[in-house]
Amino acid sequence: MTTFSVLRGMRDFLPKEAKVMRFIEGKAREVARLYSYMEVITPVVESYELLAAKTGEEVRSRMYVFEDLGGRKVALRPEFTASVARLVSTSLRTASKPLRLFCVGSLYRYDEPQRGRFREFWQSNFELMGSQRPEADAEILLLTNSLMKLVGLRNYRFKINHVGIIRSILTQEGVDEETQNRALQLMDKRMYENAIRLLEDVGASKGCVQTIESLIAISGGEPVKALEEIRAIISGYNGAMAAVDNLAEILKLVMEVQKLDIAIEAGFARGLEYYTGMIFEVYVPELDIAIAGGGRYDKLVELFGGEPTPAVGVAHGIDRIMLAMQEQQVPIDLCEDEKVVVIPVSEALRIEALRISEMLRANNISVEVEVMGRKVSRALEDADRRGCTYAIIVGEQELREGKVVLRDMHKRSQQAVKIGDLVQVIRGAGSP
Image (cartoon, rainbow, N blue to C red; front, side, top):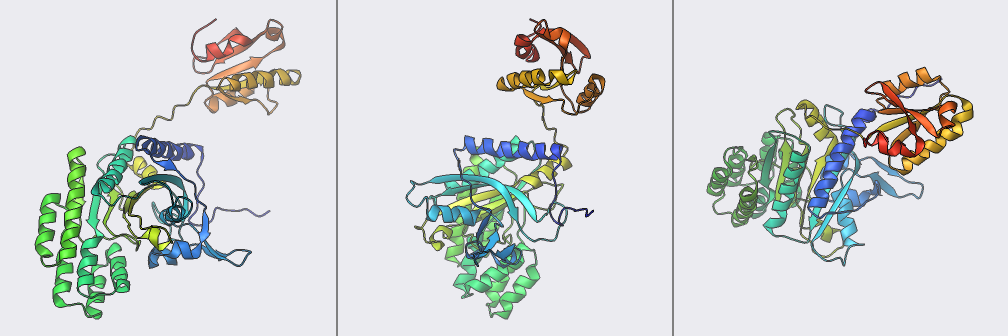
């Protein structure tokens, strides 16, 4: 007989792990409700051309790509933003702006598996589309902070930059967009020497190269001071100066509302090519991988045939947040409502056991029925192992009086209860 193992880079979530995942997803949904984001559901499989556009060479090389039976080149989604932008450029083309959209689900990249990095992973995704104002960027940062607090994480830090700073410098110096993308990809991987060498190889001026080197050296410190240092370095680059002013305004809005732990890194870049403005990632001290990240992308919807639509968004790594919570030993209240097991003492009482179970479920009580044909003692042992709160023992003698035996599995006590009073007693209203 063949034994099958889970594919490399994939994994199973056992019940307790699945509960934690759903707990985090539930908090993401709570944030979506509090910030008035509407949920949309997009396909796991999209056209390759859609997903490949502006994702960046690194992501393109890691996509699960195949030809379907219709001969179309398709891929598993490696991220959500392209799908949401497609939706906004088509079905939501005439919807009033701004659009606040939320989605959650699994994504796929053929990365080398390592701690916190899998080939199938989960994210919650928030997109605010239609506003180019700094308030929109601030909102994305604030809602991300809200989620981090709701799940109980501590000491998390926002790493922030503005991709317009470096792009404006390189554009003013005549560096083409393809080279810019390659340089930013290298900077995303912290391969700064390679990025500098690339710029030198394509003939970037000595002043340009020195400016980029000076920006890369700015990392951490107090945000206002870091922005002043950046301004001093980029004097003469008007587009870059405008980008710094934009970033300063976003941070002022945020810091007046919430005191976030923010580190400005002027050499920080992200792998996706569609970013045009502020970019950020969130880290905890215990992990060297981002647990959330996002930024502004003002040209993607237009690229897909829609109207010019400025946008900003964020993706929160649900499974990475779970790992961070484990590292920080965040206490999670996964308490459930009462769980009841119904045990018939004989096969002749199976129908009555099923009838009582359905009555309790109709009153929103979680119930399982003994279906293994075990004796009462064995069934009670099993119920205790699986954390059942109550056991209902259906016996012939009690049924003649319209009653059953209700056993409190924690207190190890039991009483005869009228069937019509079971809901009241189980919910803690006391004995009838």
